[in-house]
Image 1 (cartoon, one colour):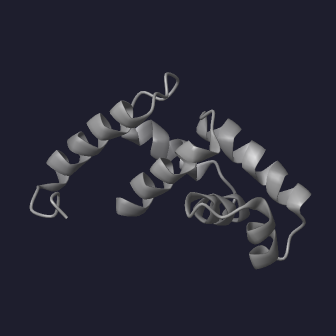
Image 2 (cartoon, one colour):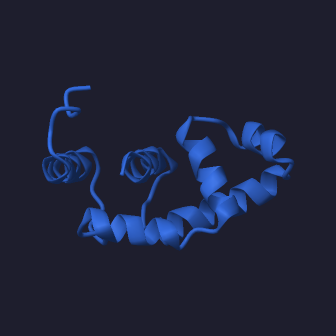
Image 3 (cartoon, one colour):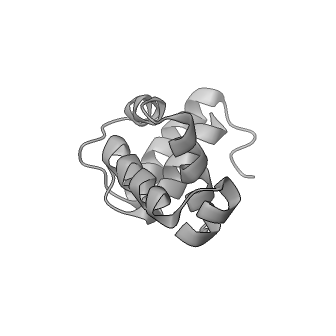
Length: 101
């Protein structure tokens, strides 16, 4: 990847610019804030978020984690609220950010 030769600080700056450009999170001001929000998620919510980031449907997530679809929906609502994002689509950017650091 083109970022592989950059220093850690430059990568963080580039990620922050790309992150804010790709979608707007007016409540979240920095990558550190996003990482802190991620830490608010339970282990199960993190599992659901990672699967949702892979574009899995609720039914697929439910089957993989042995949950009901309704429970998956509740987890996703909680994830969006805790991460202060408006759409499921944005979960993948948060997951990529926290997994890359």
